[in-house]
Length: 268
Image (tube, rainbow, N blue to C red; front, side, top):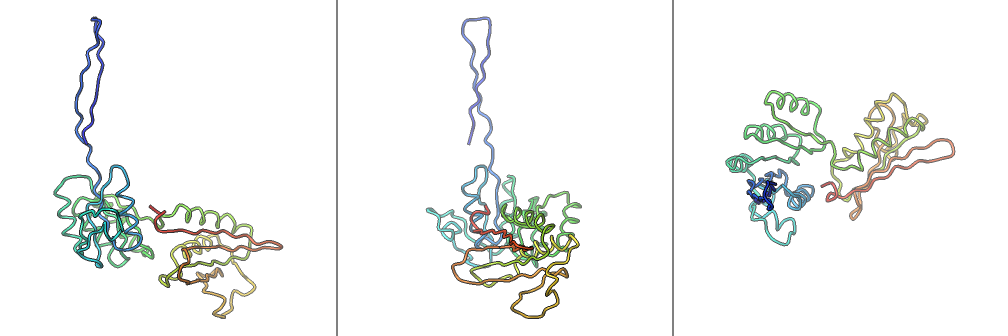
């Protein structure tokens, strides 16, 4: 959209001179959603559509191929962007516009490296949110992007609350010797969750041993031990449950609970 710019020039005459010029339009950032059919992918499509200065330029997924991504997201009007299962084709068509473009990747650890390489080959930066991505993959991506002089953001979480929960858990761990993590999900996938693993890793790096009273028990009902410091995680799976993570700390005479419930849409 063009912008009208006005300038006032004061001269010795009684009337000022007004000159107007039209500034060139600022192009929106083209956003390609890879993994668009997933819940988090659909939430990203809606968020980008509502955002100023951005527009959805492509939707990639192996599911719902050919369907309009706007209809899949239950939007009032279709976006006239069909879901495609060929990332190279989508990137190639968008790169011809010469506009600033970015690829948001919600796929999986086994494909994310190749996806970023393809985006980089077309001159596009990547934003990666792939739970359970391995540290070796992160290191390889860092080396590759540094050599290619192309940026890539790997987000361990898209939730502000998750980051605050992790920070609060670290602070509380200095005051309690017992800690357990309870998480809830509507569907039985990816247990323990990346959030629970990250919290356990953060606390394990502090050099403290937790739950010393029964750290060696092998009773399955006591949950899974993450790491070697005695931190246990319990997973609840019930349809209708919001995604939640609760960290229980206990000490003499008191129990401290850190609770987070989240929905995919708010991450955007």
